[in-house]
Image 1 (cartoon, rainbow, N blue to C red):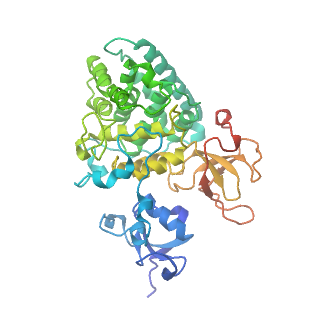
Image 2: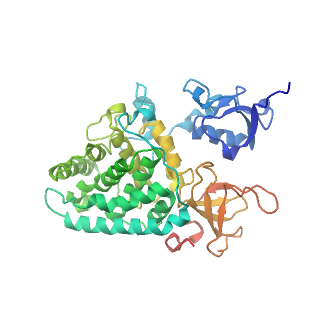
Image 3: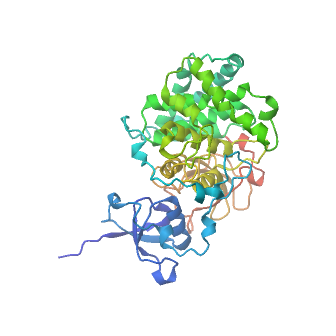
Length: 446
């Protein structure tokens, strides 16, 4: 009787959650792993293995259902002498309620809900791409521009008063939501590649799209995605009633100014409620977008599962938007760098599973990230691979000599893994958004 093959060779670029690594591309004794065999449980595990191996062998008999918090992951199996390296650094220039480096004493003492328990009363439906990012590009651009124009008119209309005119807001977000459902990459491109400035409207637009993209990843139905979109448009509306000198400060705020800034949650919530808003999910989004998992947020300082699900989504989206947006008091971070910073905050400020889902939604190399390829070429990420997260589609900007190339040359790294000479083709590092003098605002897809 022939022996059934139970292991398959997998390139480390193709590792995914739930895989059980049973063999390496080198002897175990030549690696820092303390045990022979471990699970891939997180992005940290994938990064750990990639630093050691080019490929590994996966036991295909071991099923994902056996994956639990008690089974050893790659990052736990490795001998780490510098534990401090895994401590999250404070995000410089980002207005957070507490430094991430303080997380050991603030970590919740109770088990967190699983992501499947976030929405016990919802009928969740997995979304799949129904069109390509290229075919969706025109509709996405129209939807984003339509929503952006609406936000501008909305802000003018609601510049004063103690209530808001919310007429037609659901109709304004629907085209964007529909576009994200069909394929989120096109909307992400149209949103993230808009010239970033200090305009509040731009921040609201980005937050709205990011919230819907995450909601899509969580399999929420369309009506919930619309609630996320509206909540993100409104969660900072209270800032329109604050002193302009505080909003435009090009420095960190002092204690008095910070206390005043934090009032925007209360003010915004009052504006929305007095306007007749009855959607509790939208209210949760606005009320809790500065609450944090470890209880270090505001205004109520609630923690863990006491934060409503839409509030947890709001906090994560707001943080990512703040890191990647243009700010007078700190430099803009690249999308990929923002993902790395958020990953360090999992289980601290934000639910660990929600972080993982957000990274799945946005991508390890998010749309709009500037990257360098193996031979030194510079490219920008234009679309994700839904199955090979480390191998997105990129548009080439500069050749290996850092000279501009003709636009419109796309490389689907999911399919193209090697150069013509047979050498490996990979993303080797992230770059600053405007590296090598690249004018991102001038980039157009063809």
